Image (tube, rainbow, N blue to C red):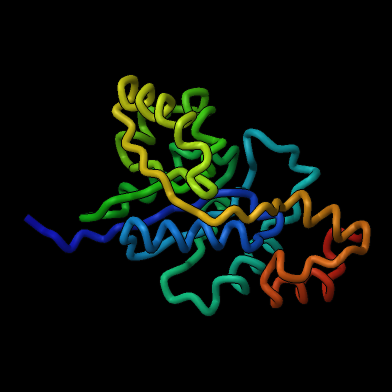
Length: 205
């Protein structure tokens, strides 16, 4: 039996823009579940969001690269950006699963998404190929999440782990609004991302 299987975390999202909340979740997932790598996967065409509200893929990708450049166990992939059509999670997980000759996949999401997982496209496929890691802020929502975890396990055989994360309340939408209102975003995003946003006049043009 091979005990040296690669443990790979996949973290999807629009990252519009990437911020410290995303990075905290990824770092805590890496540490708590002994992952070898966390791959950030910016969404190409989201099934749930209005494309008119999303920054172009190349700019979102560049900000991810800048944000994770100093972390050796973080990387990013343009798989969903290059792929035509809507970015369904099960197709992305399948693509990475088929590339792995010997390893384990972990799909990282916010705990709020766990409640809607049953309505996603092919949750059975995602469950077969990966373990779900749901980020819970300071463990406050666990009592509500245990019944959801049990339901998914019984229905799809879903394996769910909970990532303990600090209670850092920030969202990409908040950052976009603060940019438009000319408010500071310092300490909400990495300094190099803040510089990129300002130099390229992002969200203001």
